[in-house]
Image (cartoon, rainbow, N blue to C red):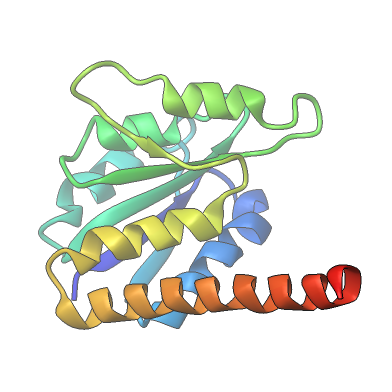
Amino acid sequence: MKKVAVIMGSDSDLPIVEKGIAVLREYGIPFEVHVYSAHRTPLECAEFVKSAEDEGFGVIIAAAGMAAHLAGAIAANTTLPVIGIPISSKNTGGIDALLSTVQMPSGIPVATVAIDGAANAAHLAAEILALSDKELSRKVKDARAAGYGKVLEKNRAIEERFNG
């Protein structure tokens, strides 16, 4: 199975990113976690990303806040799928990071999840890898079915409480 690289612009992003790491673990997807800044360590970031495909990675998740150029800088250096996680900040709530992550030039795409949406970034990475991995595809489908069942259970409990 291909690995997922999880790259944060700062270790302060870790509390959010850990939600995605937990999802990768649930699926049994191998991953590596790194801190590379698009602005402070651009050479190291580019070097890692340029060799990622040869090192067995299939998807890269990039989490950054504020200026949030990390996902775009990564996407500029690879043709692997890049998933951006805009990280919230106290000043703007993360809207600045969202806009920085989602507005990419044509030909350099970044799939962008919600602000602080690390769990969905990991689910999307799993779906991408599942295209070529039948066992992972089954796990993704099972997770969807479990989510479906949980909502129906909650609906039944609400209906009994209020409608019955």
